Every structure is written in C-alpha cells, then in structure tokens.
Length: 465
Image (cartoon, rainbow, N blue to C red; front, top):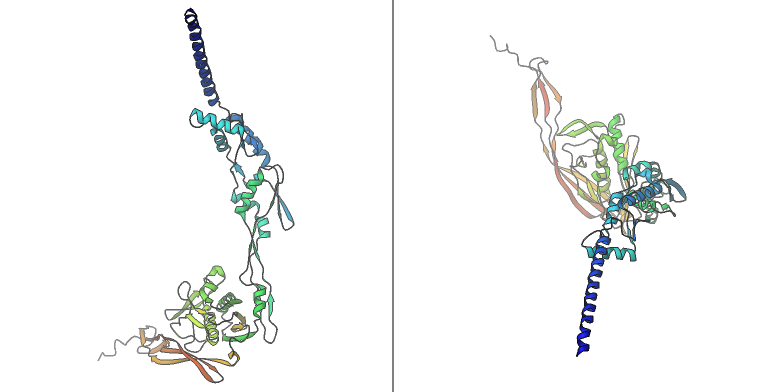
C-alpha cells in the first residue's frame, strides 16, 4: 500500500514533462514554419529558363536576368537557307524580355496562399526544380526592316507554266516557277527560342513553298496543238491611248488554262481598269455617248473573246450588249464590261481542257482557244455559225436646239441619229453539213439615238407689215 502511494508523484511529473515537451516542440515548429513561410527569397529550385533564381531576392534575380539576357541578346544567331548563311543579333531585331513578369512569377512560388501551401510549394520546388518559360518577344517591324534585303532575295512569286503558240510551229512550254515566302512569324518564334541558348544558335529559315496553278507537267500532258476557235478584230493604232488599253487588257487574258467545268470571269481576270494599273483615258460609251474615261477600248477585248467563245461552242454564263452598236464586230455580236458592274463570263463545258491565248499584232487583236485534240469524235468536221437577226428597227427622233450663230431658219445636223434594234443571236452547229444543234443565245436590243439638229432663230420681223 505504501509503495503505490510513493509511485504516483513520479508518474505525475513524467506526464507533466511530456506535455511540456510537446508544447515547446509545437511552438518551435510553428515559429520555424512562420519564419520559413515569410522568407523573402525566391524558393530553392526555381529557374527562369537556363538561369537559377532560387535563394535570390527579387532585386538580385532582376539583376541576374538583366546581365544574362544582355549577354545573349548580343550574341549572334546563324541563319541558313539552301547553302547560304547570314548572321543576326537578337538585339537588332528588337528581342525583348519582361524581366519584372519573370521575377514576379518566380517569387510567387512559395509565397502564395496560406502557410501550409507556401511550405508545400517550397518543398516541391526543392525536390523537383521548376523551370519557368521566358516570354521573349520580337518586334516584327524591326525584323522585317532588318531582313528586308534577305527577304527580297528569298521571296519570289509562283509563276505558271505557259505556252507559246505560232502557226505551223511546235508549241513551246515555258516551265513554271515555284513561289517562296519567308515566314516572318515563324522566324520570330525561332529567334525567341534560340536567343537563350549558349550553343547551337542556328536557324534554318522557315520558307513556305507556293505551288503555281499551272505546272509544266500538266501542260505537257495536255499537248495543246489544235486551234479550236479564233476571232480577230481591228482597231485604229493612231488612237494611241485606246490601243494601249486594248494591249493591257489583252495581256491580262493571255495564257489562261480552262479546265473542264471552269467558269472564266473577264472582270476577275482583268481586274479594275484604273490608272494605277497603266490604263489611260480614251473614249467610253456612257449613256449612249462617247465620253473620255479611263480604260476606254477594253470592251473590244471582251467582245473579241466573246466571239471566239461563241465559235468554240462554249456555254455563255453572262453577257451584256452595249447600249448602242459598235463598229468592230457585226451587229449583235458584242459584249460590254464595266468595273464591278457588268461582267462577261463563260464556261468550258467540254470534257477536255482549253488554253486561251490573246495577242495584239499591229492593228489586229486575236483571241484563240487551243485544244489538245478533237473534243469529240466528229470535232474535226464540226462547224459553228453565228447569226444575228434584226427583229425590229427602232426609229430615232430629233432633238432641236436654237443656235443664235446660224442665220434665221437655217437647219444644221450637229449629230446624226441612229436606229435602234431588237435582236436575236443564234448559234448553229453542223457536222458534215448536217445541223446537230441550233440554239437561240440571246434576245436583246440597242437603243436608238436621237439626232441633234441646230436651227437659226426665227426672224422677229418676218410678220411685220
């Protein structure tokens, strides 16, 4: 009984000692955790690209990045393309690094959230390093300015293969050219990636290859040699500006491959008839009057093409006649065009490709459609005839104006009038003199044009007695 009583004080003090030890340990751990979490240095194991920032203050990290980045942006990068080499400094093309954002991101690791999150992030970084990306940017304007000469040497347009046709001579094919374009956006990204490297600072230039629409092999396979249809109109070479416009538009529709099903648009192919494209001012038919206008004469090109297309027995998609007849084709066989307004379109509705050639020689404009051979078993015996019929003549009136410079009662024709016409246009296709197709292509009309008559004033004294 006495032994049990004696042992109780000893056990009591042992328990008290253990509790005190736990309290002291917890307090020490809490103090350590608070101190650890409030460490103003960047957590160990944090890297910015190739540079270790762990253990540094924000100021120290900023200085380290500035020094290291200053060194690499002044270190040359080698550019290569097809055996040629160029050297470039990142600083010259405006490579930049926002070091403040990098330092903020590095410091945020182990300094965000509650105390336990901070401790957890620091421990994880120490065990497995964290590598932050360095957001480098390149000034594309500086890059383009710096590489303008290089880009001009590399870039080149894609060019179609094309045919040269001459009567009684073999067709010649000029090979195509594959286009190239230096891709500045990709190059800027590559420069950003390579700038931070100590070694292998080399870039093979990103160049996009552009395939032309018409290749040499395609033209060679078609073996164009037969003239399916052709049409020629004549113009006055003394009208220099109009002749110049005819030549420009004729060149625009030259060397065009028409695959089966293709729809040809004159306006799309020729583009706007504006001074910036070389067109000059020449007479244009506007509201039944010939007035000066940029691009005058282009309608002769669309009309010549129209007639060649008719003779090739192709489908007409869009065609509009002039408001008044024109002199360079038979009545009813014209096709007018106007920028963004009136277009001439046709379709290659045959089963084989055609090749369009347009040329100006002296005072003649000729449009030809070449084919690789017979378009059908009877193509060589096929004949196409275009007929325009006047259904009705529309009489013209007179516009009378008084002219005080004329003697009283005198009449003078200042401008002759012109009949209008209601028309039909037909196409007849025959094979060995047998009609296989006769189609009405269009019904349309030309407006009449009133004559302008000038008369002298009436004699005011003629009724005086």
